[in-house]
Length: 563
Image 1 (tube, rainbow, N blue to C red):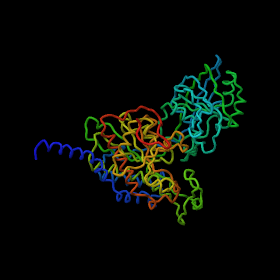
Image 2: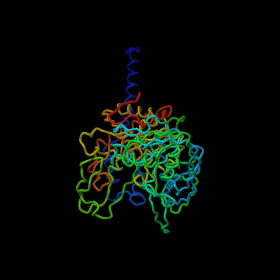
Image 3: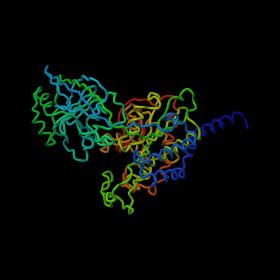
Image 4: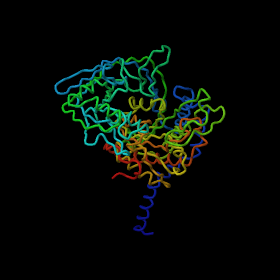
């Protein structure tokens, strides 16, 4: 054959080889492996893998043993595969205060006397900012409602009042309870101030859901909150205030606060109010006493990249390997309990007599074994340019313990991390609906990096059988707020681009019937192959995915790449 004919043929063969390398490598991810590992991870022997239990320790050792077998490098403490996570029970001593200034007049309110600071206030800081009134502080596209229309709170402190805006009901309560976080994270406010839910008789407030509340241990001392995070890092303040603060502010600009409060109680529209020169000075001055410490463990391993120029940078992949344990009273697992709200009209399935163990096959046994399969494929196959760090997080169900700890006490510098991919519940169809057999929900892919979103779309298109990517749960109006409810959120809060992969909720969620027999292993394999392919593409980039921080743009009924 002549040389001029040989070269095009050779180039075509090389191109096909490059194009099929990722697919060939992803074929290392097998249903047999996934089934074998999950059969143990979700077995009764592990008693539901609740944090601080022997069952979770057994699961962690099982994962670590496999990592060692595959040649994944340990990245935990003292050359081990385990990072100790310290869960602290903390009591707060607060000297924090809020000073409000308007029309040349100032009033100072101390924590517990007209203003309530969260018990975990973060590190000491002072914030001086303008104050912006944002009505109810809500934005919800399905009701065509937006209190932020025409308002800019960037760098300001957002002030809102009332509770349910016009047309809002119980379905939207999750949005209502997250108004402060929404103002800070989505609208870039420096802080947020809202109404007290009830009069505050003294210092402090109730600890947030999932934070613990009261500590155990040998001393039975009360704890104000439970955390794994650093206590010296400043946090954007989210405060609640009494009627006195609203009265002082609003009367200064000619507003009748009692009339506004009455309108809010009736869910009537609130007027746009210009607070003019109103400013606030927020002094965060809290000291913390650690009165309880409990220990759990993340499992951590690294597959080193093959390019010395970028080998010390990483893509993080994660899943949580804990679950919710077992029911101590058999009566609590009786059939007929109402199904989760996400699957309206469904009820819990029948249970086996005496079955009290929440096996967590899908939540998050499916993500646990998917991450194992990806680690094995990279460790035993072709290495990408950039290194990959795998983290099996502990205590996600208890309050994102493992991921929050890793984000505050990382085993590699966070500025060396290009992206984080989180896998949580990827082995079923949402609400067990056959129409969802090909559906995979993505959350957060577009919020910090448009490029990361597009890379994942391209990776899916390159699969032999692409999945149907659904962004309904990424919609800013998603009342389930899944963006904040799994481990990716701990990294997104640090500015790291993330993608959360999930196949959705079902009626076995957090129930004793979430068992291996109900896992769709062909689907689990395909989702795992997609995450593997996306990770490979990100790890082979010569740069980090661009962080343009455009926020959520792809939502309900939308799909595809962002131009």
